[in-house]
Image (cartoon, rainbow, N blue to C red; front, side, top):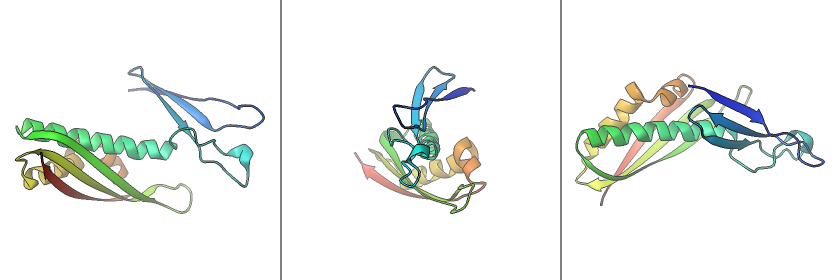
Length: 149
């Protein structure tokens, strides 16, 4: 797996903190820093997600992918799956994630709560590389809601 991340450079009279990631699979992703009121020349322009937001989003996608795949392999009729992630970060550098809560909402026909809880546990214990890595610095908790389609 590979990725090239390039600074997009200054725009106009102000420096920008935008970056373009080009993945090995041929896709692109824009990222930007937060505006810095105290030092505008060092801040971003709020034109794209922050890099750490993309880490959190990637983790959510990684674990949701696992949950859907596990449920489908179990022949459950899953129609939708979403995961809402909320997080806390350390106050001092490096500002790693210290807590992450993932709330999964799975919609389907006759999908048992226990099957969803098992899929979430398997993802976090065995399959989701991203959440397992983040679990080295963050306490990760989960909750589940199952809706009937």
